[in-house]
Image (cartoon, rainbow, N blue to C red):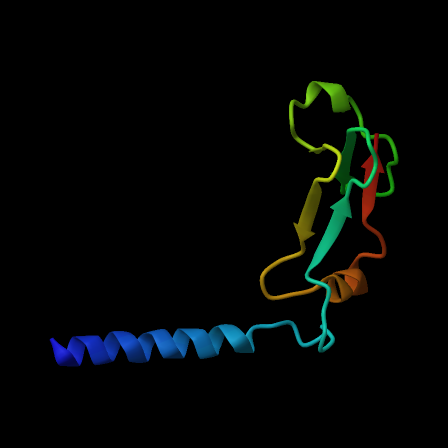
Length: 103
């Protein structure tokens, strides 16, 4: 039993150390891991991230027909992460823009 516990602890430590090594080397020391959208108004706003560059039309999207998806009520915020082992600085090396539509 003691050997099994020791093995599990050792495996866990190896996994944690290995996870730290996977951080994207292109990220600065203080990376931006998320885009934070904050509604500081007194009205509801809606937003949509769109990836179909360079097309600027977002098709049949209707912000009012999306229930609570993309809805920010007054005082609410939304964070969009780029991934566990990377940052927005590294993302923008390969993609030159991120489009966010507000309604």
